[in-house]
Amino acid sequence: MSEGSQRNSPAFGQVVIGPPGSGKTTYCHSMRDFMGRIGRQVTVVNLDPANETIPYPCAVDIAELVTLPDVMENLRLGPNGGLIYCMEYLEANLDWLQEKLAAFRGHYYLFDCPGQVELYTHHDALKNVFAQLAKWNFRLAAVHLVDSHYCTDPGKFISVLCTSLSAMLHVELPHVNILSKMDLIEQYGKLAFNLDYYTEVLDLSYLVDHLASDPFFRNYRRLNEKLVEGRTRFPACHLPPLQDKESMRRVMQAVDKANGYSFGEQEHRSLEALMSAAVGADFHFSSTLAVQEKYVQCEDKAVEEEVMGL
Image (cartoon, rainbow, N blue to C red; front, side):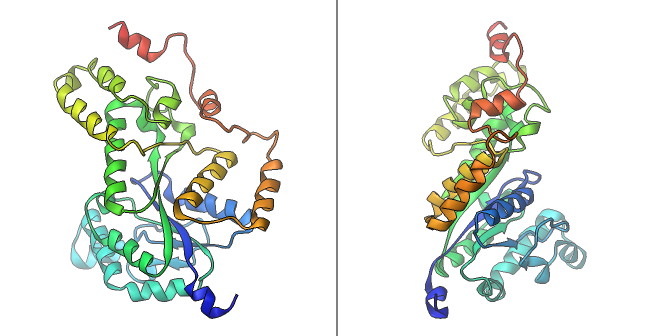
């Protein structure tokens, strides 16, 4: 491909967003390795000025432009205000980002983003950066990671769904929501329903009934009902689990569909070879039921049955 046609051809990629500690950097590391094994050239871009421990080869690092510790020290800002300033500084220096990205034109991009939720729900700096990338012919999809342990708390799960919906509407990119850290899903409590209830985001009115068993949330039943009602008007928020190579493949295909990336024949054969080598290994689970059987402890009496008995 000539230099001119490569410059004009679309660039594909993912912007990886989500709350602090949801596994964004680990996801970028794992997805980079997975894509590399099927022949895809991947460039990882760190846009988190607070990320001091980067496990992957970082082609473009915002630390070359601005760092959170420097901003906090020189401007006497806290971590939240400092992150907002860093993103506004990046927005004001998009020529720096364009120059850095131009060296890797033709690659697939993974953007490792900061963990401050406000940056995706109502602040405009990152949204404007993504919009400018689109003007540069980047076709991106947002991968929103959600810590799976929120499923064990109905109140937090409803809050996470509202946050995901808010990010979907604000960022204005094709969205893929992912449940991360499946091995820790019951670290903070038991699931009230089967795992597919949470991954498919089924009838949330059952969660309202479940919250009613808590004396604190009982006083806010009407508020919870309105939150659930608002959420059900936008049924596009599914939360597939991420826990092995097969689930990585399914996530990659979902993102490829969202951002318009099309497989090449050689990559397709490499993917088939990679997945055929996985047969019989510990990562052969391919369904939500299999994930539940692996990570969710089964008990004689389900939590929802206990609630109905209250």
